[in-house]
Length: 220
Image (cartoon, rainbow, N blue to C red; front, top):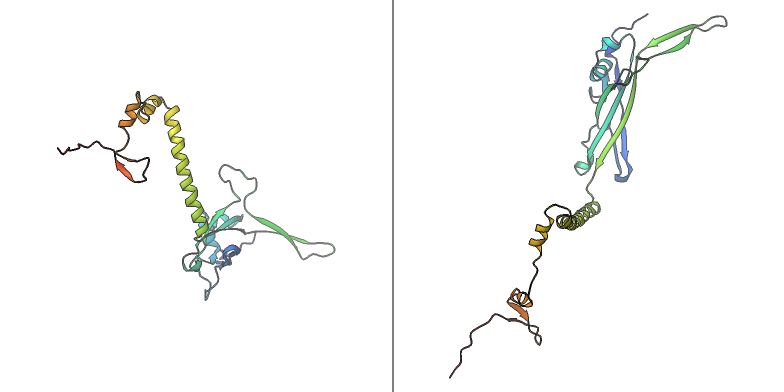
């Protein structure tokens, strides 16, 4: 086996472009950059393996398959998302993960070299295979959506009041006590008259009149 030296310092340039057509938003991790930035869009193989939780010596001979998850979380209300930067996490996926066993770890492939009509050389090489997965969350204030949400919340509050009142009256062990305190049964019509407010509307007038009894002074 022929081992290449210093492969851990080989660099990988990662270009990530994403867009949200609804907001006319486009973002790339290379725009506005004068040169590649180490740890942002430029990584060494040793750094990638280390971020995945392994040392480079552990994968040097048999190789590995590493997944890079690129995640954008952009608030488009702040500078129209110009300062939005991707976050990249690396995971090794060719080994046992969460109890799921794999019968083949590492990464290798074969190719033919020096092929002639009577012979050929089959070369098996090991290395690191990189896979990438991209996801994006973009948020922006919308008055219509906010109004709809507020209206739905207020409607739910009114429904909650009705449901709560029904449960208290009929579904809890102390429902009779709740109904007794909520409603008062009048035994005589005069009781209802005594509970009327002091102000009422005279039948022949639209103006409120005092109905409280007053003492009248007679002039002799």
